[in-house]
Amino acid sequence: MVKVARESGDLSKVKFGVAHHGNSKRRVKFIPNYLEAKNIGQAALVELENPDQAKLIVSEISNSSFMICGMPRPVRACAAEAEMFDDRPRKPGRKIVCRWLNSSDPDFEVAKKIKHTVRKQAEEAKFLLKHQLEEEENLAKKQMEILNASYKKFELIDSVVGNRVADRLAERYRVRVADAECQ
Image (cartoon, rainbow, N blue to C red):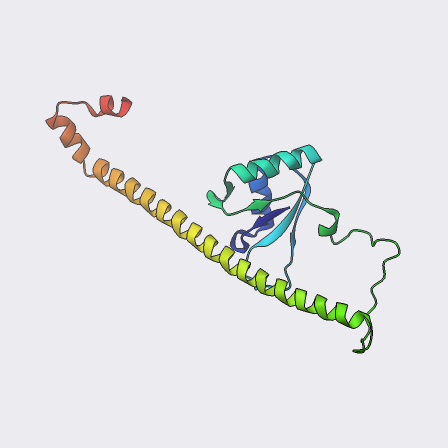
């Protein structure tokens, strides 16, 4: 499973990004997150040829940048489990039953504790999501600054060569431009 940012969330882009590390076998599928906003990162299940290749790709993505459209993206990877697939078979003997509990019921306290735990975990998840989004924003700003700095350097080099300043400097210091380019 690979978790990617939603703005880069095109299936073909994710498949192409994974192809840098290995061949994806059949499919790439986004797992919808029904509980959170649409602009957050989404998880994508990427089916690979064998488990060894999956382990290799998970370790490579953890150690190096995941490139989508020439830009590194904040991506986490982990091995998929059977529970992540929506087309998995139902466990035999499991049946979901819903019912109202009276306060005198012995399971009432258990349900109350579960309800409290779920609310606590929801608040923790909300805090972690907020922290994760801040980190992703900082990473995006940093990447944009690097991109802008590289673009400015390219523009400076282009203007120096285009205005023939490099030729005049080479003439002044009696250096041939072809020699300077080779060194």
